[in-house]
Amino acid sequence: MAEPAPSILVVEDDAAFANLVARDLGQRGFEAFSAAGAAEALACLSRREVAVVVTDLQMHGVGGLELCEQIRDGHGDVPVIVMTAFGSLEKAIAAMRAGAYDFLSKPFELDELAMRVERAVEHGNLRRELVRLREHAGAPTPFPELVGQSPSMLELFALLDRIAPSETSVLVTGETGTGKEVVARAIHRRSRRQSAPFVGVSCAAMPEHLLESELFGHVKGAFTDARAARRGLFLQAQGGTLFLDEIGELPLGLQAKLLRALQERTLRPVGGDQEVPFDVRLVSATNRDLESAIASGRFRDDLYYRLNVVQVSLPPLRSRASDVLLLAQHFLGRFAQSAEKAVTGIAPECAERLLDYSWPGNVRELANAIERAVALTQYQKITVADLPEKVRTFKRSHVIVAAEDPAELVSMEEVERRYVLRVLEAVGGNKTQAARVLGFDRKTLYAKLKSYGVGDPAS
Image (cartoon, rainbow, N blue to C red; front, side, top):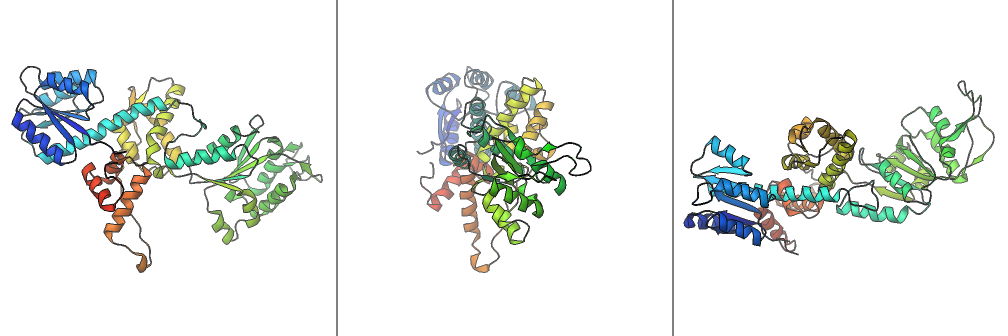
């Protein structure tokens, strides 16, 4: 379905100037129309959806400041740009206090007005999206531990829904901070083992001899400090799920012992001579390329195939940009509740910084940033000032690395085409968000999509 062009209402009692502005905005991809005064403008707002209002400050009857106040009170999600021939700091402050989004002094270039209108459209869309996400954050989902609406997350939910009830071993892969343990717990909670324990351990957290004892247990006197027998994690997770995080760090010697235990479904505690049966479902996780580790002799291929019956790959946050604000609102609700602070939302300018940042630390880094913001904010909405400095000051760099083979090199036009389509895919087809990431206005983006032959350019 085609996405309608944003409707821009120009309020100006100078009919010739109003028509000039509306005509120019119309040529730039907006649907622009005019009203001769505040009363006509308010009537238009009550009849149809308007993305942005551009109003003169000095008009007969009700002036621009009063109109701003009435729009703020009755149509709070519509940004207002105030223009005036009597520009001053005092006038600008008065307009902002009245609820204006932006202030423009006459005379001005039509290009400047168009740029500010484009920015106001994005601001309004973002404000409405934040309201929607705030409402959505508490909605029930099949996997309440996992948050996302992007295509990659919907595919993940569908996969988890199929594998959770089974007894199949699962290997969860993904970059650090993508939520691999959260996924493991979600699988356990949707499985038939949900009433039994979920037990997890990091294979990188301790030396080999301690890790062996941690996994398989030990008998009394097995080593110097073994003053009493101890059940290992396999037995502690009996009937439930055992989660082995950072499985790629498991020492080779232990890999052989783990493989034998999984094949026989029995284990031998350290220092013991009796085989003990166990019943657990195994979920493993790694941020490493295990196939490369196999090729270099650092990981056993037979253990890999035993662990990797079903692989669940978690996307990095940078490839699911459309989920950033949904996740941010989710974390905000959690941290505000634990801190007992009345923080309910995210300021639009803050949301823009969250969207611009690349999140190399993935979901974990976003959670930390929101927790910090909730702790620092003095308002009901977190602001740009509450964010970590590297998020506040981040400047996006669009770098594409081409192939080394000259035969595979492509033109700059083709590089741009591929990147534009990749960004559009990453943001779930949201053209406003894609244009912001790319640094284009909507009209430019539509023109490029049309030239690429990608469906309806306004869809």
